[in-house]
Amino acid sequence: MHCPKCHAPMHTYNRNGVQIEQCGGCRGIFLDYGELEALTRLESQWSQQAPPPAAPPAPQPPHGQAYPAPPAPAWGAPHHGGHHYGHRRDRGFGRMLFSS
Amino acid sequence: MPCEDLHAALADHAAHRAHPVAPPRPCACPVRVLADRPDGTVVRHGHLVVKAHAPDAGPALHARLTAAASPGLAGIVLRPLAGAPVEASGRLLTCWPYGTPVDPAAPGAAPWEETATLLARLHQAPPSVLGQAPPPARGPEKAERALARLRNSPLRGAAREAVLAAGAAVPVPPARTGPAVCHGDLHLGQLVRDPEPGGGWVLIDVDDMGLGDPSWDLARPAAWFACGLMAPEDWVRFLSAYREAGGTAAGPPGEEWRQLDGPARALTAQIAAQALVKAEQAARPLDEDESAFVDACARMTPLPHGPALDAAT
Image 1: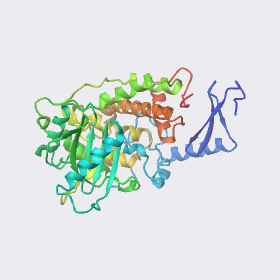
Image 2: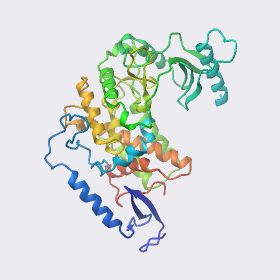
Image 3: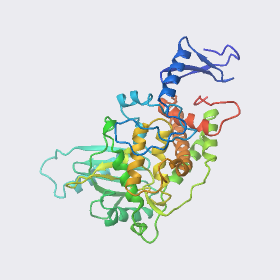
Image 4: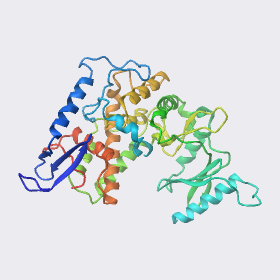
């Protein structure tokens, strides 16, 4: 697939089940039908789950109970809402957790 | 030395150590190559394993082995079996009890608390366990080597630039040494159940152990959490257990990123650099987990042309 704007080849990425095409030239992004809605849905789930901005730091919650999200760096992955981990738990660890 | 020869030498040595008196017929012990990398090859024979250390392991390995055998690290680091290391074709061979590793298929059973507690105890161990000339922990050196390999690889493109820039922009350059005994290469493959009666989880692989900044031992889990590979609840369990066991390298609750940000950035860049080089050598695209680390590097130092999602173009 080629970019409709600059005609450079586009590359496909999968982010949380949303298929994204990005242009290797101008870096524009193309979304398929329904993908914008999927992103909006993920965003609203994320904001529902996110703690209020002034949440206190996590005070050692008993395992398995609700807790405020632990602090994360600004450069971290933008999906600390709990949503991302469900499918990881189903398919096991990433092999990266077992290698140098 | 060709790897078949090394495997044969390891298998021979393991069989000899497992059965000092040769059995009348071939034994039924499980025999397997557990790891085979340039920096170490490990063969299991029944209840023990033999490790061939890296060719450049050097005299520092002796200090690290002495520490592993010292009472100061009992119950923290797996104790080697008695007997001096032997040499085979320029590689030192050491002998260890076989312990059951963490099960990669059971994330719910991952010993996060135990890992954190072992690190906290290691960080509070007396530096004297490493002897008169303690070697440095090799975390920072390994991060630099991974970035150098990427720099010297034929790979070009936005992903490479983002990772090198992230590696170069780590706010506090790592000290070569530090105040605490550190493992130097922590991940979930570095724990086994001590086969001694009543033995719990212990750390293995002392090849990178030495004195250093203990926040570097927390940096890989911190990078996993930051990049989305470790669930927030697991990260909270890990940090809480570390602090509860007296570990100080994460600072007080809620302020862990003051101390961990620099080392976690360095580890993220290291993991991303290793992933790019491996993917390039195998002529394959990055997988989802690998991309997460490259993407994190791109967010650390935004490039003028926007987010760099692409891997190898």
